[in-house]
Image (cartoon, rainbow, N blue to C red; front, side, top):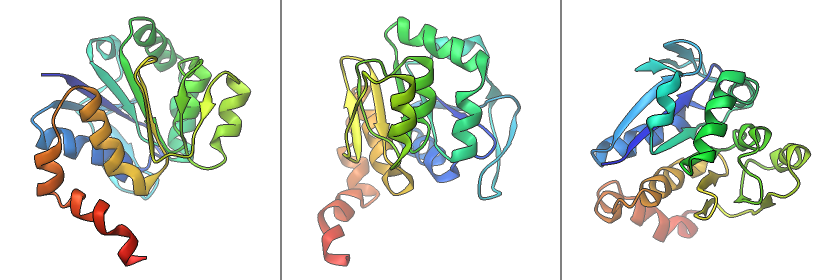
Length: 194
């Protein structure tokens, strides 16, 4: 079974990170909450998160590492040199990396988005282009670039789509869980509620 890490930094969008943890654990995937620089993280909406561990070299052992967004949280991820070094090594080893909302800017700064198809929160694509103009922006809800092993998503409302896309990129069947969590119902009926 694959092993996933979700890296939380102060100022993160709590729902974006916790959605991934929730979905993967429901699918019986080992999913660790990893604090960027400490165990206790304060989210952007003042929700205190207690992580399982702190970023260290074991990040190289995960099949996929995911970043939630949040302007402050993603800036903290983007600017952390230790994390950047580990993520570059992961990318060179051909491992999956995922980021949503504002967090793709961290992957762009690390060079992980080079030549990749990606999406992000509206406007963040401009910062990503400053780091690497070879990345190709899309307005899709989630973008899974299998060639470059990068998965990205737009923002808080797309957190469930991001979570299921992560599981599917790792070869996990999500059909039963989507049905059990009423995600398929939501996807089929969203237009009716607008």
